[in-house]
Image 1: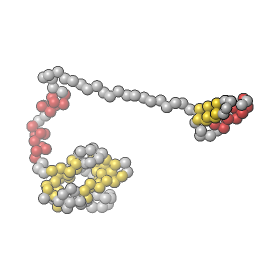
Image 2: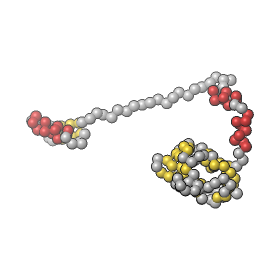
Image 3: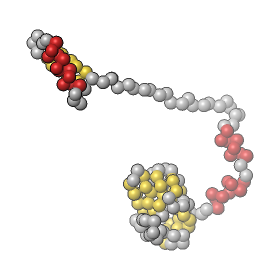
Image 4: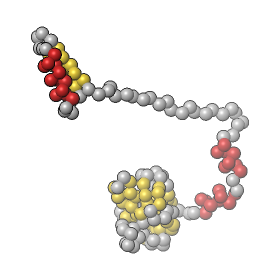
Length: 157
């Protein structure tokens, strides 16, 4: 293959989306590659902190110094919780002008929709797993929720 043909091949490869061209015959082998090789970056996980015996972690110190009223608050809420199965946005109603799915004091049946948690533009209906009474709605409409956040406090019936 002469230089003129090789230049023509290179021009054809650069004018298209082809990233690699390979030609092999009995006399010669030609490989034309465009672009860069992918670069892989490795990141190490953060180191685990180990504490000497008798040393309290900052979280343990903060918990020990917290007022007693704060620890008594969760115990005051009797009943089971319905927790968010995903990270997303809590919606109490199907639309902005619609009535909420449930309200405090309402008795709901198994399988009834309690709310919607939107995740990545997908509306996920959260249904009741049992017949129950709604004691408390823990989140405000359009509030962000994390996995495992309590959405409702219920009393199973």
